[in-house]
Image (cartoon, rainbow, N blue to C red; front, side, top):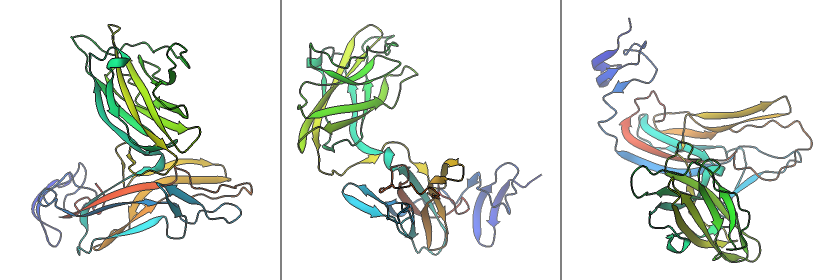
Length: 338
């Protein structure tokens, strides 16, 4: 039976209370420990940062270098574009946390809003200020509903799909397929603005919170005002409204943030392998962990055997947005990220 608990000296210089995972010997295991008393003693932040990694050496079949543009800055693929070295110079391997997401998971956010029960007419809609966004960029609205009375929940039938309502001039651009939740273009939007969107949280459990991803789009000109109504109906057929208004422009805007809890830095997502024509993995991993630095690497790899490969940009699924935090505590996960 493996030794599981050690109080005292472990290795040549580490003192503390250590508990190994089932089946591991606490004295010499190289697997992460179940408990390490060094962990909570000094989780003081040493340094932190963030950045963007595009794949290394990515070209089309004509030899053209591919690039990725984010908020007005262009990142070109090169021999070093897929890896960055994070230097801390602590003289030992510290505890650290690294997270990442793809470009497709970045977007503008609208502050969480609650639709009050008295907003039972569009004229009484809760007014929300939306951000200024670039035409066609993803924008996320996190919403919630506060119902009056007891026993009320979302109406569990979908709202009728209305492409255009001539009586009001409203144009529906997103419907929830399971509950009475919908979003439609308001007449207060300027005429050169259109919408697309969908509910990314389908609310299949019947809860009263969700997320709408919408994209204001300029059909002409360089700027316009977007405005739309979010409508929710409860189980007693009462309707609630939230109006979101903002500006859409052709100019690049800053301020997009991750739209989900980022994937841990030691995880790698393998998308697919397709015959011998081309293949790739997408994700981020940590390697070359040492006493003074570690590397963050975008693992995207593609082998092209098709002479018709003529892409000229790097897609959102191939780029990694990363952030990291380094603590002053020693690493207790055997050189791994939180």
